[in-house]
Every structure is written in structure tokens, then in C-alpha cells.
Length: 287
Length: 290
Image 1 (tube, rainbow over the protein chains, first blue to last red):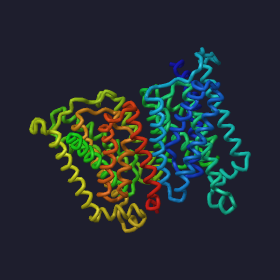
Image 2: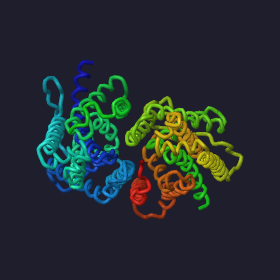
Image 3: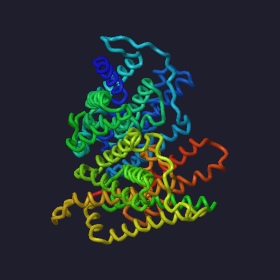
Image 4: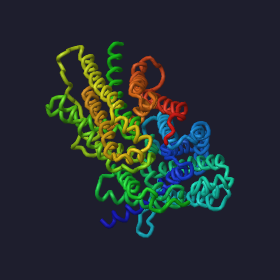
């Protein structure tokens, strides 16, 4: 029993590491542009499969392939934002929600047309788990945790230390004040959508590294990622990191009581409770 | 060709009932519901289980609608003060929760294997013409749902629901319980989806959780959007479009020399996603909320 509790702790952190970047992307778009983007889960999928193609078919080393895939996902995210979402900026919250649902269907099924319904494995050599302080961890789980932490850290630095980040935080905190203070919103929106696509794709590669790539991996991660984004506070990247650990732990320890296929249901129940009881998130709406 | 036409009509009628339910919730009362498939699935499973236990189809429809209505009322009751975007997330997640329950609780409907050999109403009466008879039964149900919705539009309740959609506080200020009307609208819309589910189960004689994914909720959303939210007749046209796109591609599949079944199925969902995005881009000016 104790052994199980220990091992769930490790897998909770591992799961959290794949969900956190995606949740940070959702959180940024939700916090700055004020709509829930249901297509971001699919950017995980797209990122994972792009990394697969770049590494397996074109022979790039996986870290480089992952970076290129994330950049490409960011560009796709930006391109769709400029061609579709930009038109509905001032049309309230419903049109962008509906657009993101359409985009979700399109991206998920483009992946399905190209790669089919089956699962794919990123080509990494098999590796034995390490024993660290009594925990059993595979090298890929460690890599996943480190990459996730570094990615979130980098996003945090961008938000805290750059002019762009300052504008992002201003628009998230008080859009009216930001606008009258001369913040140009469009470049900020563009940067945020690029970042969100990039972050989600990193999450997708990490998820692929931990298990396999499937067309539904993004959809299956969507509710947990939303739970994390809202729990962490919208627009709050570090909050997303902490909330990812909480949701990860809730999901893993729920395995002591329910079947594993209910994991995303556990995340949803947490999410629904937060929305109904404390809609501003537990950690507040801070970057 | 005629068989195909009858199949399309049946599917259209079923999708139209689900869509009209959504139109009542969303078009009339302004309650965003991205989880309509949950009520559709509830109805389908309820009817399948009951008819297999020799309950007459008519009672099974009523039970399907009633259980879906109760579930709808529950959702509306726990989310009365949620903002539009939060309601969107919660309903989407709720439907996923229902799907996971159907998938995991094997005693409900055999988990991923689903329920097969679902009895069909009046089977054996019409012989070879049975599909036509079933299509007519479904159309009759659709007509009832449609007329109910049309009556409601003109009735005091319909006016109240639209008033809630436009500005809740006005309705509250004249001493009406906004919550009660929201619950009523949501559960009525859910009941329509539940009844449609009963027909769906009987028509296919087989149901499984994989048939009730979030995509179905999005398809009916597209039907309502195409028909200009709020209009029942428009929703009907939208449902015709959606079911031709979904089921019609099965028909042309035999004539397309390229692509596997998976690819063609994926392609039509891509078209659906593109239609959704294009309709939103064409119509967003008329969708601005107060």
C-alpha cells in the first residue's frame, strides 16, 4: 500500500508535467483574450505527431524535433487566430468558443486522416528506471519533468521580465486601463496565441514521451488541463504549474478508489466544484 | 436509393429532435449547452434497457425523456449562476462524465461493448417496408416536438425565456423566478434529446458509448447555428444539412476510389468543423450577447 502511494506520487508529478504547459496555454488565452479555447488540447496532439514526423521520418534528434514541432504549432495557432479568431474579437465570448470547437474537430481529424486511429510511439530507446530516494523513475519521466519545469520557467520569465510580458499582464489584469495606457492589444494577442500553441505542443511531446501518441490524446487531456488552468487562476502561468501538481495528485490518488479510466472525470469533478464554489480560481487571477 | 433516402429522413428526424431541444435551451433561453449528447445517450440507454425488458416502446420513449429531463434539471440546478463560458465548460465536461460512466459501469450497458439486439417497435407489421414505417414513426415524433416548440415560442413561457436570455435581471425584477424557468427550459430540451435517443437506439438496434462523443453535441450545435439560433424551422433545415453531411458520406463512400473508411469518416468531421467556423464567421454579428 505504502509502495503504491509512493509510486502514485511519482506518476502524479509526471502526469502534471505534460498537462502543465497546455494548461498554461489555456490559462494565457483565457486570461488575456477572455475565452476558453477548446482547440488547445489538439495542439498537444499536433505537436506530438509533428515531433514524430520530424524525428522519425526526417531523422532530427528528438529534442530538436520537439522544438521545431512546438514552433510550428505556435505558427499554426497564430495563423488560425489571425484568419478566424481576429474577426470576432469584439463579438463577445460565444463566437470564439464556437470557433475553437470547429478548430478542435478539424485538427483532431486531420491527424486521424494522416496517421489513422492507431497509436504511435516516439522513437526513443528503451531505458531502465532509476531508483531515486526510493522512488522508481524512468529517464523519460525525469526528462519530462525537467523540460516541463524549464518551459514553464521560461514562460514565467517572458511574462515577468519583458515589455511583451508586461503588456500581457496589463491586459489580463485590467484591459480598459491597459488600452488607455497605450498598450497595443493586437501584437499582444498574437504573441499569446503563439505561446499557447507552442506550450501545448511541448505538453503533447512530453505526453508522447511518457506513453504513446493517439488522435484522442489532446481531447483526453482537455478537461484536466482546463481544471488546472482555472484552479491556477486565469493568466497565471506559475499557478498552472502548482495546480497541475494538485490535479495530478488528485487524479493519481483517486486510483485508490476508482478505476483509472475515470481519471479525467476526477479532474472534471474538481473543475465543476471550483467553478460553482469559487469561480475566480483558488490561486487568484495573477500572472 | 430509396432505402438511402428513408435512412436519411430517419436520421434527420432524430438529429432534428436533439437540435430542437438545444434550440429551446440555447436559442430561446440562452443557456449554452455543449453537452446535449449526454441527454441523447441517457435516452438511448434508458429505452434500450427497457425495451429489452419487454416494456412497450411508447413507455420506453416517455421514460427516456423523463430520465433525461431529470438529469437536465439537475445540471441546471447546480449551475444557475454560471457565466456563459463556465456553463460551456461544465456542460462539455458533464457529457464526457456520462460517457465515461457508460464506458466503465459495465452493469449499465456492457461498457465498451454496448447493448445489441434492441427490439424495434411494430416490427413484423410492415415486413419489407419496415424502414419506411419506422421513418414515419420518427417523423411523427419530430412533428410533435416541433409543434410543441412552436407553441412555446408564442406562449408566455417562451416570451419569458427570451426575456431571460436578453436580460435576467428584468425578469427577476417583475417577481418571476429565473431559476425555475431556466430549469424548466433546460430539462424540456434535455427531454427532447432523450426521446430522440429512444428512436436512435431502436433504429440502429445497437448502441455503444463510442456513439455518444462530444462531436455529436457539436453537430447539433451546428444544426442550430445554421438555422439561426432561436428559429425552429431553421433548426430543422440545419438538421437536414447535418445528417446529409454525416450519413450521406456513407452513401458516396462506395463511389470514392481513394481513402480508407477512417479517412472518409475523419474527412466529413473536418468538413463539419469548417462549416461551424464559417457559419460563426458569417453570423457572429447577429450573435452578440448582451
